[in-house]
Length: 335
Image (cartoon, rainbow, N blue to C red; front, side, top):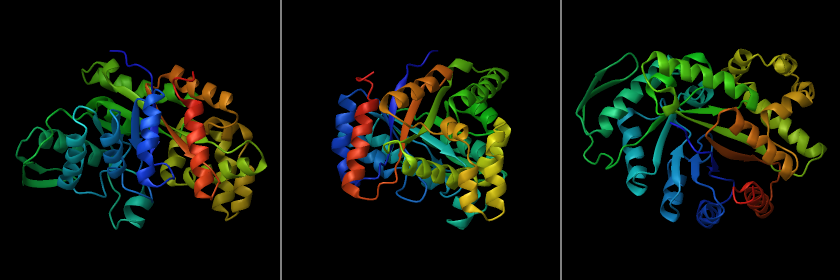
């Protein structure tokens, strides 16, 4: 099956949560079809979707809910609540996250992430079907759980994936895959792994939706904006999970940054980032340039793209205006 191209909000934006209701309504009127949440060190991934779901008819999805930081029953219940507020419009995107989030911030144990995701998918499908679940897996043990209010309509489950193991898993068991922190050119390599795994599993490769969070710099171009982008990249791509991902992709132009970072030279790490590397993983520049860059992701195989904004602006009112302006500039009705 062929999926239509969908441009999505990546919520919550750095504005107060109540203000995101009128924002979402305006964006829906401008042609945005979805809102997908993130969860790192700010708000949780479910609450912003509840806000959007009640204020619009958008499809809403988590990208992602972490499979380590919530127990299986708690994760199922949180998902069911949003599914009840947006029946037929909710997608549960799950993923393993990274060791700093799981261990450093949540006192968990980051081990066997692919197994954890696979077992969580199996649990969630049974729980959403209203079954009594008994599991003795390698990472999950569930003894007799049954949801008393399972979703009234099916909840698609998407898997966030970086390297081959998780990409293959998405192809084998998920309804969609969530990509992150990659270039438009990288999309083809990742999608090929998903499609091949689906075919080997006897599934229709075209039935798996490809979604991606795009990192979008919204500050006016200039030296300060460039430095802000480099800091943003360094904060993520020095995390071991993302380092391994970009090594798998073959992005050798990040090696200088990694070497300087490991040597404790943070300033040198930023300087070592080539313009080529910055332009590959960040969508930035003029509104026209940003729109053209997003189109390259669609052309490479992305079905739904979530626009995640990055800015160095600290003033809440100015940041809100930057975000609203950028969302209007990228709106499907503009293209």
